[in-house]
Length: 253
Image 1: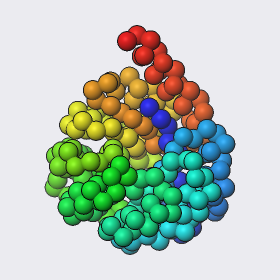
Image 2: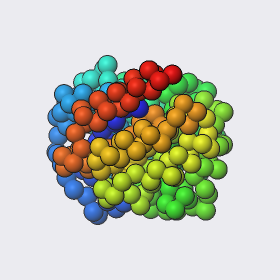
Image 3: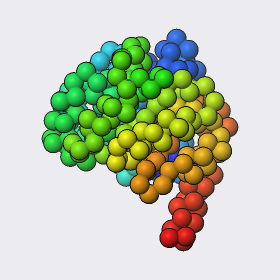
Image 4: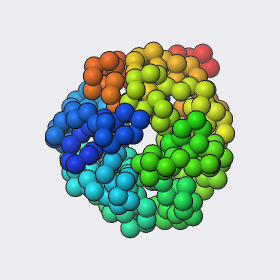
């Protein structure tokens, strides 16, 4: 499992929201490139970028910052979500050096786009499922559907999706811990790597995720934002824990 720093972009700044509320944002930096450099220095193996304005607008708004980060760190895998609703946007991001694009709202409203994107850009598509009480939320979490997140995930199980980012909205930015049962339920629903998001608050959350996953129900990563920005979680220490856990598991096998 890898620990993935989140860089959430709003109006060109790096922010963290509470439960996805755009009016409840804490600004951590006005320099996204410097923020990315900081996490690279701390040993990040992947970055999770979110265009918050884009998620609401339905098209990229902070694309320049995303492109600048991808070009500055060509050897660092970067994934981007927010405002990705068509193949043209996906192609532009991949051409700019982004490794994966995350389809969220469009996966709910236009599932065919995911399947077409997987065919066109094999290996570069992640589905982002954001849920509240197990129900999928869309439009930057402004709308909650009647669709169960696990049922939607099953629609994409065999179309070539690289992984699923699963976010529990109620936990996001609240520093209340990861929703382990819901994350594990998602991992059991589909044979795809799951990246947990929302609520990571301490090294103990990372340990619990490691213990919850296994070889058949894979939790491949954990996205963390507020915890690392507020020094509640040390990124390097968390990744070392993941590495040692993997080695101990390999030794047992």
